[in-house]
Amino acid sequence: MAKIDGDTRVTGIIGKSLSHSLSPFLHNNVYKKLEKPYIYVPFPVEGAENLKDVLKGLMNAGALGFNVTVPYKEDVVKIIDRLSEDAQIIGAVNVIHFKNGAIKGYNTDGAGFILNLKNDLKFELKDKNILILGAGGSARAVIYSLAKENASGLTIANRTISKAEDISRKFSPFFKKTNFLISGLNFPKLNLKEYDLIINCTSSSLNNYNLNFPFHLLKKKTIVSDLIYPLKKSPFLIEAKKKGHRVVDGLLMLAYQAALSFEIWFDTAPPFDLYKKYALKSKKCQ
Image 1 (cartoon, rainbow, N blue to C red):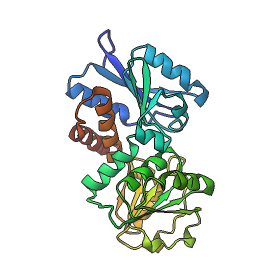
Image 2: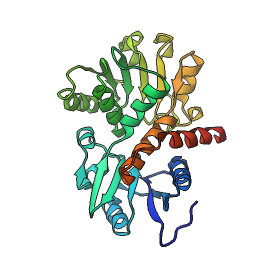
Image 3: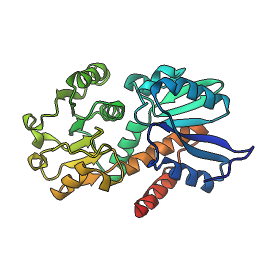
């Protein structure tokens, strides 16, 4: 970890359980490489009721900005002074920037996911049907960005159907070219052979429980994704790989998202290659 002294400014990540977060490794290596006098630290927060005091205290202490992770991406929206257009529509924030005495909120999760799809999977969204499992903050960001890229059809499957309906109701007026469908997590009722990409945005892998997804009902070329990393921690991806599907975890999505955070904080071009380099380096150690 970099040494903190009078010339070092702080960035970091706010969440509840941060011991396994890769973000400090990525950012601190990039800062060191680019000779930035900054340090990136995990900052666990117990309870959403404490977020306001924590953010105000960090801003007053001279911090530059923070990432936000589960379970606070939606809670923090109420505290932000100014939201980007994307964050406002999505209703979730994963990047905070302290500037001129104000707390600004952004969402780069979905953009990071799209960059991973396009650059690394060579996956084009035109005429594609996609099934998204979950309707939380990360799911909202992914769904928003997929629709922004004119995905043909998006099915939102969630245990609480009303949450999926809320997303569809909010997003569909903005994206006329995308057909939004709603489902519960009763997969056999869906025609799974229609889908080109399945994205697990639920907390199933984080909590180590199996969704019992019927992978045998998918077409073989369907890509299966989970926002968690590394792959070995996702029962969902492990099972999909056994069934012969191409799988992708959230590692490079995190790298792109991190580079976009860097862009916001430092008002400069995002160093995508550096963040990808250190993400892939970390993979060798996992």
